[in-house]
Structure formats: structure tokens, C-alpha cells
Length: 220
Ligand code: DX5
Ligand code: ZN
Image 1 (cartoon, rainbow, N blue to C red):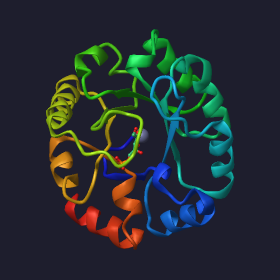
Image 2: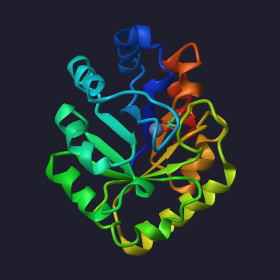
Image 3: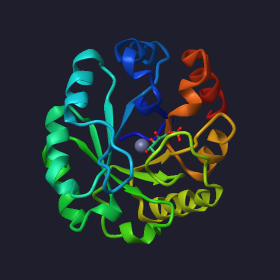
Image 4: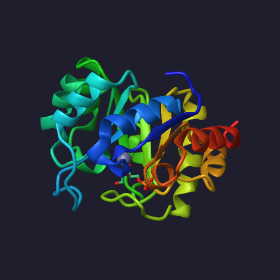
């Protein structure tokens, strides 16, 4: 994947009763990905979407679907989400016992493979999979809910990952997720982030197109 700025709205904060209109508005706003937060009520306290939502979104948009699995036992479900139409499937390092195998399975099922890290997890645990992985998702809030505040200390982790990427000459993308807004996108970009997930900040703005444009200006 090429390194550039990618904006990925999280539909968890969209108006679910008008999902089709919301997706059209995101297409018009020229976002890059649709981020889908899958929660199982076990790995995280909340319960959200299953593969049927991915399957139906795939029918109504050309935008790539970025599926973030906040679930226990991702090995049981990851390929089901690929079959449903996910373009990127990200599993949590904390939930996966055989992470290397997990990444290979997602890739051989035909999607890009991502690994997510909770705020307290050190990036060194990924050292031996950085060559394989397409995306490293750095959680900048504790997973489970939208609308939480960005944990500023985690910005150091993004810098560390960026450094590991440079030293190892890897080409994975760094995705940031949680509390991302117009005030911190520039800092996150400077730390090394490529993919910017946003739920509440983007969806609470009246004009998505205008907001995305403003963010891109800051991310230049
Ligand atoms: C949190 C989810 C995020 C969340 C982002 O567990 O992974 O994707 O929806 O929402 P905001 O941008 O409101 O923090
Ligand atoms: Zn997410």
C-alpha cells in the first residue's frame, strides 16, 4: 500500500437509521475508507455490527471497507468478514494467540491484514510480524466506545512505530483510532500516522465534505 493520507470515518457514529444516505454523503465528501467497528461484548463491553452489515455495505458503496475486529477469538471470524466484503481486516494483538497465522489467513483470504494495539500495549510485540502486516492500528482510546478523549501519551507509540518502520524499511501503514479530530490530526500526521479514523468528530460536523477538506489541508 502506498503511503498517503487516508480518512476513514467510523460508521459507529453515523445515523444508523439512514446508513445508505450517510454512506453516499461520505462518498461525496471523498473519504478514502469506511471504518466498521465490530464489537462482541466480550473483548470489549459493547456489541455492534456483524458480517451481515459488511455484506450489505459492500452492495451500496465503492469505498473500501476497513473492518476493525474488537472481538475475542478473531481466528474464528476473520475470514468470514473477508468473505462478507472487508478489504482490510484488523485484529487485536491482545485477542490473538497465533498472530502470525492470523495475518497469513486474512491475506490468503484476499484482504489486507491489520493488527491493532490497545493503549497499554508496547509496539515491540509486533517486531516479528512487521514484515507481514499491511496496517498497524494504534488505539488512541481504550476500545469499546466512540466519543472518548484522545490519550495523548500514545502519540509516542506512533513515533516509535514510525521509527521501526524506517529502520526496518517496512511499508505497513499506521492507522490511528479514537478521539481523532481537527485539533490533533496534524500532530498525529507528524508522529507518522497515515490512516485517520474518526467517529464523533466527523459525524457531529454538519458538512462532512467541508470537514474532510479542512483536515486534508492540515494534513498536507
Ligand atoms: C473505538 C472504536 C473507534 C471509534 C472512534 O473502540 O474503535 O473506531 O468508533 O470514534 P471516535 O472518533 O468518536 O473516538
Ligand atoms: Zn475502530
